[in-house]
Length: 262
Ligand code: 6PG
Image (cartoon, rainbow, N blue to C red; front, side):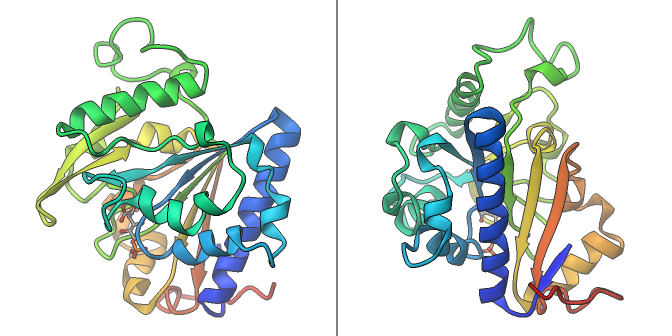
């Protein structure tokens, strides 16, 4: 866990994480696969990554970078709620990433379940896995390790109810073991979402939670030090690295934690 004094320092810490992992992934494997989170918190990060006056844009090998999305709202890409639309405006339209390397969820589809299936196939193809594995994963109780794309870095946020990506408390999507991507109805928001599932999140080489603001402090403490074991964000347990990047406001309810001094 790293605690930054304020949100500006937080996004700089996050930008360093992204750039460092991009550099090492391309050296190690010739490409960098990154899943972006939505909402408002990452906007500052994406803006910083795209800023030509800052070092990060030049450090990231955009031509070898593939961008995916942790979740998407059930809206077209030009809708103000679209996570892709936000990422495009703040980052993707400002960096030299090949268009074919941007893998957006086609959430304009009338049927969110078909958008989820389509995205699952796109993910599998992007990782050279072809169509679904041998026999329906459902019948085998879930995807085997060899059937899980390993993203180099997944960025996640934390909702004030403990959700992450579009995995909301009590959702059946939390129990999904056979699919990489599902559509899920969010009763509180009265809308469908499309989300990566826990098996795929947990297969990542690294998951970074980026959380800012006093309104998240209680939930951060629940997840990291308290009674929040059942919360969706608590159930993300990657085999790789799990890193929490917080500003001091979001970390305020944590016992015994000190700010990082970058
Ligand atoms: C989304 C996100 C979601 C987000 C949290 C935090 O589609 O909204 O994927 O999981 O990360 O809701 O959102 P804020 O950053 O806006 O607080």
